[in-house]
Length: 91
Image (tube, rainbow, N blue to C red; front, side, top):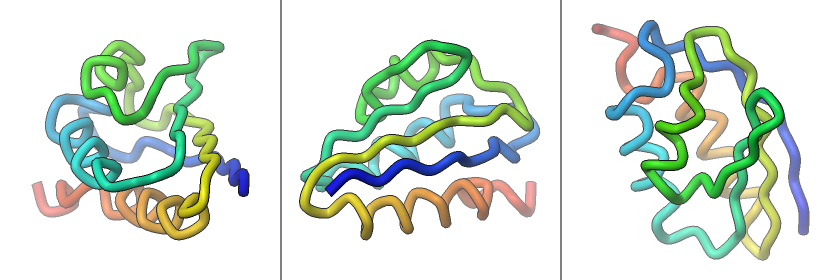
């Protein structure tokens, strides 16, 4: 199954080290292939360095593409993480 969604980076500092780490931890047991696309660059979302290389700032739009058996379930978790600012909402 293939799932594609757009999310907005809401963290004040964009996708810096803390949210990138949270994404990689969330996806470590994911069986699906996960890609982020930002400004015509597509990366493997399971790689912390690749996420950091996107240099996605606050309010950037990220296109998430997931393909695999747990794509729907993992997409919901990832969308929730973006919406909750990866736990930085209180900072």
